[in-house]
Image (cartoon, rainbow over all chains, first blue to last red; front, top):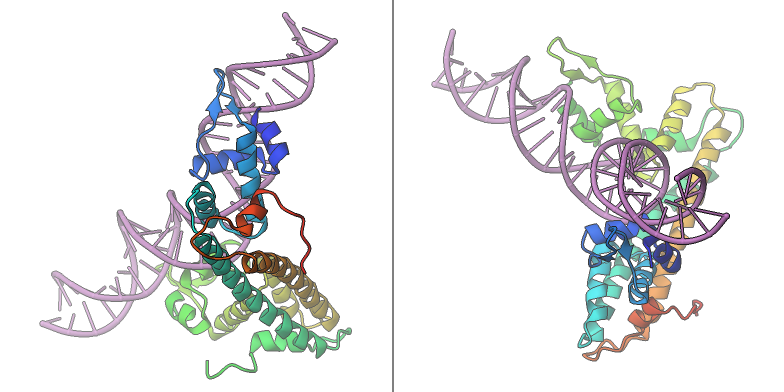
Length: 135
Length: 135
DNA sequence: CTTGACCTTCCCATGGTGGGAAGCCTTATC
DNA sequence: GATAAGGCTTCCCACCATGGGAAGGTCAAG
């Protein structure tokens, strides 16, 4: 099948399929005599794998490792688990960061009158944070 | 003061100060006859404001609005509050996304033996999702 | 044989940041 | 006054993952 059909079947856009090929995440597709890329059901299977890994927030480098393990029939599930848990740690760290931001902002917003007058603790905090030492 | 000193004093790198100027987030700095950018304490104050807004996860466009409100002596604190709460909503949405990913991965990883054998529910899920709910 | 949908490659943009090169400016030291 | 060090300038490149779009080739249906 052509790239458009493979894109539709896998949920990976044609643009991204070409990009993944260019960056070596997937092997170069076979070509027709006219130069059209050809994809098998196997290929679509792989693309779907990639799509789902992306949906779970894996970066392309992580997916590269996942694909390697996937293809390796003698892999150790411990390696897969380690890869996944490392990613979970990254996610949790990012979540904590965002949560800190949200909590700070909510606290400030709760203290803001939200009326037609200009005074606002949100701006005050941005101007001169309360918890900041000598700057 | 020169850009390097302003960078040190504000916590915004010289690179980023130039970038903010180029993109119109901050007004063009005054220049010496030799073309060096000059910054006042006022300017550093503004740069610190920007820095803190970045630390709270505001994108540059949001900071542009915050700066506008900050400078507007007749602003309504309601507008600031609205801006902040919109950002909180964005943060919470992103947090929920990441949380979903982390929870899914943790569930799968918990079911993975993590030993030297190849079978692994993480890879199985990537290969053919079971459409499992977070339990 | 034309038309329209598809494919190809190539370039550009995003956002926010850093790296680095080539060349000018300033300041301190000799 | 000369020289060296370090700061400044602009300009280009890179990241990551993705999309837009142009110019031109290909295929299938009418």
